[in-house]
Length: 256
Image (tube, rainbow, N blue to C red):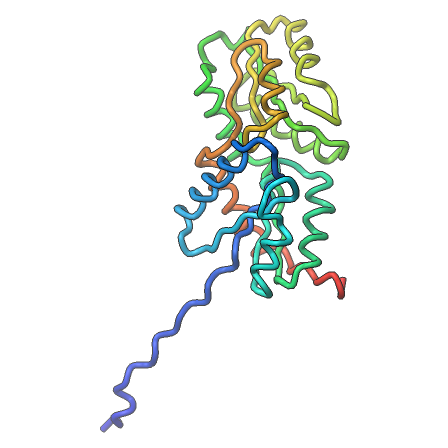
């Protein structure tokens, strides 16, 4: 006969909490940027309620990333840049802040290039009126912030290529600063090719000075920034999951 102890069910085991997701935004003086990013994080939380989601900025807005990481203590976290390409912030700023933190950190890749970004870009163009003109006369300028890092330009060009394949029209990447061509130059190039209906795709995560300046240079329709499109929330979680399986924990600064 079994003993009385064997009839007692074992205590329920509690699953450990998943690592925190820290979304790393650049920061902006435009108040619309912070409100947009906050709304995007709410979308992420709705998709994955079990994952603790936090925000940290590289500059200009609170909370700054070092403060967010300090509040996490020595817990495990994944840093996902809310940035669309490689560049100085991805290669230098974020890793240095991560290494100086006591948290056990995985570094994720920037958001772009990725087909989910193309989903969002296409949706924003459709919202702005894309599709009402013949393809043979239409084209798109993909307006991005710009960087001196050649990898950033490579990543943006890759997104332009993916968007061109999706839309079936020429797409030229252009930049607000630090790289060429500018939006007006790209527009002139497309006009010279006989493209009369030139739309601007806003390759920015949120409203801000650069996005506004590029929109003002649009000769026809201008799409809104990527913002809170559902594909953006999905992509943040994809980069989070990807980093957990592929990215080692960043060593602390003292042992780096």
